[in-house]
Amino acid sequence: MKIFITGGAGYIGTHTCVELLDNGYEIVVYDNFSNSSVEALRRVETITHKSFTYISGDIRDETLLSNSMVGCDAVIHFAGLKAVGESVAKPLEYYDNNVNGTLCLLRAMQKNTIKTIVFSSSATVYGDPEFLPLTEDHPLRTTNPYGQTKLVVEEILRDLYASDPQWKIMILRYFNPVGAHESGLIGEDPQGIPNNLMPFIAQVAIGRRDYLNVFGDDYSTHDGTGVRDYIHVVDLAHGHLKALQALSVPQCTAINLGTGTGYSVLEVVKAFEVASGNNIAYQISPRREGDIAACYAHPQKAKELLHWSAMKSLETMCRDTWNFQTKNPKGYG
Image (cartoon, rainbow, N blue to C red; front, side):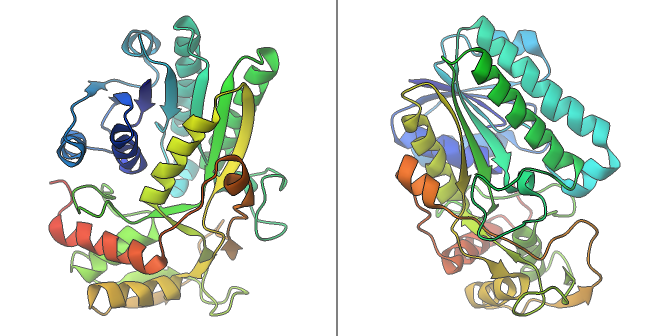
């Protein structure tokens, strides 16, 4: 079975490539390398001892998309802009890339009679939670343009399935991916200032940044800092394999991929100090607009339908992140 992977050179994409190759799948990676590196794909080949095709192209180039996926059986769709703050400043770019790009992808799939897709969605579609843990039937609403693009694409996929029930669609709502491959060869390598907590902490630990800003210590949580559901990227990659395997029959299903456990910012800082052996300097800063107190998954649906559960602990997430950071102090370079 051959899988076409948009955004396959990115953080989650590369780890999923490893999972698929190790399980006998063929892959074709399609990426514009705007926030990723060809070097990461070379390292995937090193880890798996397998070669594969990768194509440099924009998700909005419908002709190139259509020609590139000839002979593929299914699509995993990672490609998209993903920074919440940037989406507030540049909403048109986010709608153009994430929504228009997905429409181009779906039309290219139709031209090639490919009707199986796993879509990379996000827990941001739940907005500020009405209840915790979050189940898939929680009301859907968002607090920023990035989350709105994910929700719009979800609605497009549901409408597509309603129009043609032969489609096989899995919508995976991620929580907070962290960690790296145990080899230390691939991991999260954000360009510029990291938007996510774990890579920022890692850069403080290795001396690339002076301190971590902790945005708010007055939330209604056990230590006042924000609580999130952190999931190891390798567990997340395995979830995509299970999602593909579950798409043996037509459906359009949304599933949370999380651990079901929330950790506060300060708990992550302390766990990383243990993993790295270094003190993590931080300062308390005002809350960021749009941030919420707590967000974590109810993972039961994934366990029942995908036969998948997250296995890796917070300690392992921190250890693997630190391993990648120390082996790649300047990222992929």
